[in-house]
Length: 211
Image 1 (cartoon, helix red, strand yellow):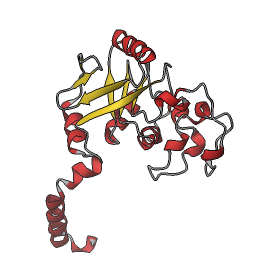
Image 2 (cartoon, one colour):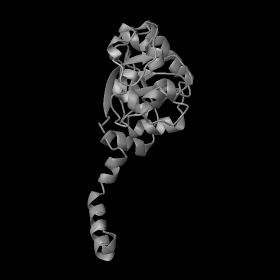
Image 3 (cartoon, one colour):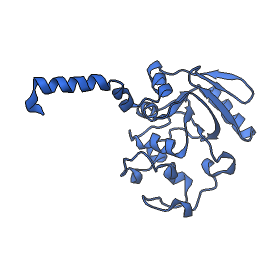
Image 4 (cartoon, one colour):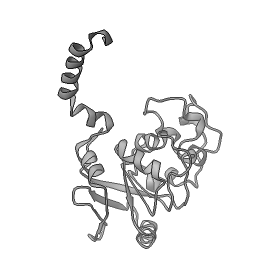
C-alpha cells in the first residue's frame, strides 16, 4: 500500500448525502476481485447516460454533462468533498477500490458509514470528518474558486486551505500509523515474518504429521 504523508490535491464537490456503495460502484461490477480497473466505473450510473456493464468500452459511452466528475474544472481531482453518511449501504470493499483507482486519496464528509470508513484506511484512502459548518464553507469556497486545492498533512493532522488557514482533523493513532507507513493488513502481518517462520519450523518438529 502506498504511504500517505503530505498531499496536495484538487477538490471535487459531490453535494449529496447518503451516497451508498452501490452508487459508488454498482453491483454488476463486483465480479472482479483484482482491486484495480474499477475507476472508469466509479459512480457509473451518475457519470454515464447509458447502462454500464462489465467489459464495456467506457471511452465511447455518453457522459452526463451535469455530473461533477465530468466537468472540465474538476478533471484530475484527487480529493472528494461530500455530505453526511458517505459510503452507506452494503459493505463492499470494491467501493474504496473504485475511489482509489479513479485517483482519489482523500474523502472529506460530515460522517461516514462505519464499514466503509474502516475499508478506506485498509486501502490507502484517508477519510476525514468535519462538522457541517466547515463542510458547508468548503462547498462555498469551491463554488467560488477555480482550481480549488487543499493540502493535507497526515502527520500534523491538518488541512491547509488556499488562504493559508489550517483545519485540524482527528484520526485514530493506529490507522494513522498504518497510512504513514503504507501498511495494510498483509503488510502488518509481514512485519512479523521472522516470528511466523520460526513458529512454522517449531511446529514441524512438534507435529511433523501435520506437514
